[in-house]
Image 1 (tube, rainbow, N blue to C red):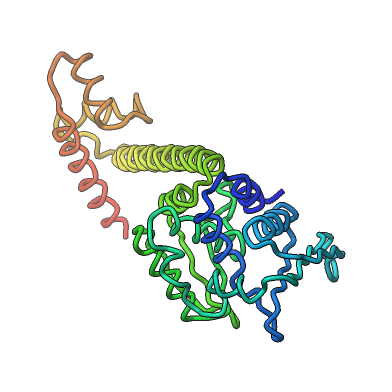
Image 2: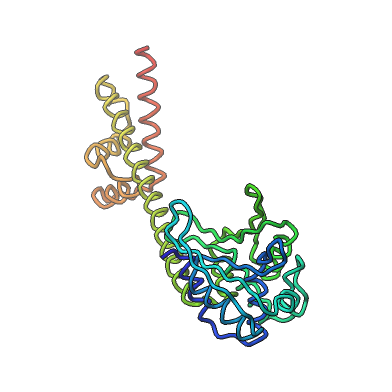
Length: 304
């Protein structure tokens, strides 16, 4: 079962007041009016089909014909159809299904507004499983004005939603993981929210650890390369019988570098201070190796 299906199956179990049920139905049944002004609903989710059937029957005493058929092509899912026969005009008017933007009474307080968005998600929404490579939530519509209306509602919750056109559809989407968890909180998908947050926190922690490890590895590589360059310079000087040109302090640094070829300058300075009894700082050691480098460069230039 997909993560989106898990969310929707959780939502249909929500206990709602009658006003919230009406608001949810309004968002859920958007675009359900066919060309003959009848109310025809199709869904691949059996739980949503049962929800619509029960809500319409209990709230509007509707008569509904239910049909079930196999999906087209390679789609193995069943398609559930609900055709409403009784009180259709009243349902359409009460749920504001014949207008692009619903009547204000359907979203006039926090509870009904959240219920409406929940219904919209049940009909048009999807959320990527947080285990996948990217965070993404979207609502897909065939009308730009309605997409703008929904986007404005989401903006009222500071969800940073945006709209894009994909073929003939208008997609209201959220990409930020924190904002997607806020959306799940708004529609009261509590179990999905906890799952999403746990996975998100786990991924963020792993990403942070990976960044630290990569940074540490880069530092190790840099230390190793720096030490190798210093050893190459020292060997260059020895090979050309120029070791005596170095002063005594620089020779000590060169001897310790050859003795400890993989240590960082910080560690090498600590070792030298401890073993020689003379304090040497990292910057002081760096200065000595610069002298070695300059001498090696002069010797190489003479070879050319």
